[in-house]
Length: 276
Image 1 (tube, helix red, strand yellow):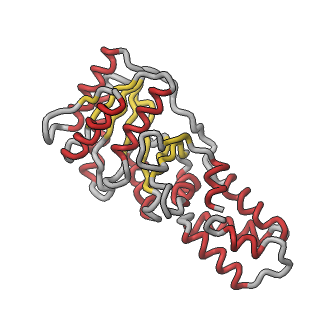
Image 2 (cartoon, one colour):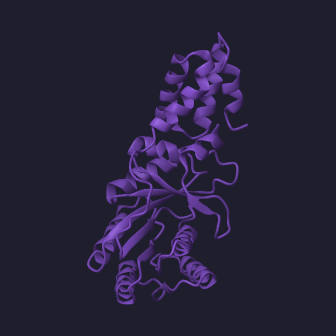
Image 3 (cartoon, rainbow, N blue to C red):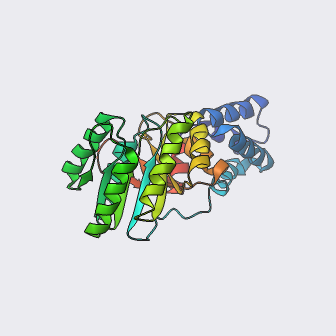
């Protein structure tokens, strides 16, 4: 049974749940990283429902709080996809996994290693590229990220690839100069290709800091979707739902392991079920 499934089971079908039971449910919702706003909505719905319907009220509230925007990837081609996020979220690996998923779907993809401030990130993406047989454009050490992205966009257009996926630098969301650099990358790519997706990578273990990160990234660029990673461990994963509820940014992909194939489109019903 999931994180708060046992608690819901105690409340559901009980005519008079105790105050302690309700407090336990609220604590569990917060521990699942759903955040105070979404947890509050769920508590109101569960308390208002008939006792036998408490569990369904929670599920219905979670579903109704999700974004109504499309979870499908843009079909505009050729197009650039920027993968953004702070260091340590699994951004570079997610760029590779997304590339493989699109190739498996019949698309042609070129990768750009624009996280030039970390040599390890460039090498990691090049290694992934070799494993999955996808070309990776990169520059010299500490090259200008925008320059690498611009060169990759030109090559994508010349090769007639469907998508360019740009692994951007893992910018700390508190540094405005680095966020400005992300905007620069977007502008130079758009001189060659339309930027059809900007996907924010969120680590499921990050807790409410993930919502702070999402808000600041959303202020800097027009985020089109979320990739939530590291949901295979003990991470509750509720932070992704909290971001959707707060900002209306749809989760599009879920990374649930270290392997290249441990990556799948987001399925709301299955994800919510795993929480319960």
